[in-house]
Length: 299
Ligand SMILES: Cc1cc2nc3c(=O)[nH]c(=O)nc-3n(C[C@H](O)[C@H](O)[C@H](O)COP(=O)(O)OP(=O)(O)OC[C@H]3O[C@@H](n4cnc5c(N)ncnc54)[C@H](O)[C@@H]3O)c2cc1C
Image (tube, protein in one colour):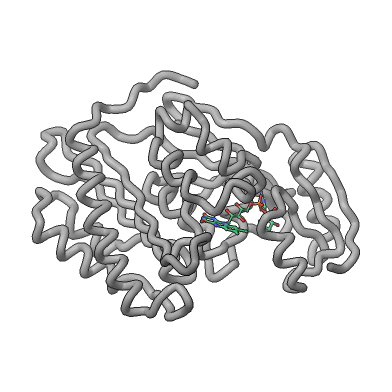
């Protein structure tokens, strides 16, 4: 690894100013679980690391009845996994975090780093997109909030400018009569990262009979996580039937762009996506029918 300077700002404004001053030379450093590997491999050779770990405004998890869940960019996978508040509001996140990487990565890796890396073989983005999550971003020119889906542009490429910091992830309260499920599949030979991951969120009409909103988000089977919009459209305004679920699975498996690699062939991954869409849809539907609307208390 090449030598680098190491800066430790204590506010987001200070960090953005440093990034702006050293554009092209500096990189944000959070848990370091992703960046350190790339630096050791010589793929990144930043002259300056801007460690954001001392910025307290990037920490913590809060819930507000109107805004929903707010997760600071420095919150680690392990903190999400073990948070009673997250378990109460969005248990799917805690259940998924338990399967992410290993305990060392979960203790170091942050939600901000997970999203900002633009790494395609990850889990959280699929769930966050299915929940209509937003990323709050601060740069030298001010703040903006974008749908999480718009963060991802290509393999390891996000819409974050070099002098911007992802500060928080916002998840709006789950609408009544909603169910959400995420299923990841790892091939037995490569246990650390998923081969495919599918999140499904269904929100039923007031009558509880037909589907008002569907989100089907496919991950690890393309350059970025992406909604299967044609498959989602099949569900809107309809009653869920076995035939519809089968068709949605088939369509979704054609809406992604998997590549053949050590995690499986393209054809194999499409078959996995089809199965995961069907299973996750069934589970999300069951939840939407049976789980009472979430409480609106503040955390
Ligand atoms: C062995 C292994 C297994 C893994 N398995 C999984 C898995 O199963 N599922 C899964 O979802 N993920 C998995 N990951 C990815 C892991 O979740 C990420 O490495 C981790 O979350 C990154 O967070 P970090 O804080 O360590 O980021 P860092 O390594 O510090 O940074 C990563 C990138 O994001 C940038 N960055 C970090 N924070 C910010 C911010 N707030 N604003 C702007 N830019 C920022 C950095 O400049 C860098 O480019 C795995 C990683 C490893 C090493």
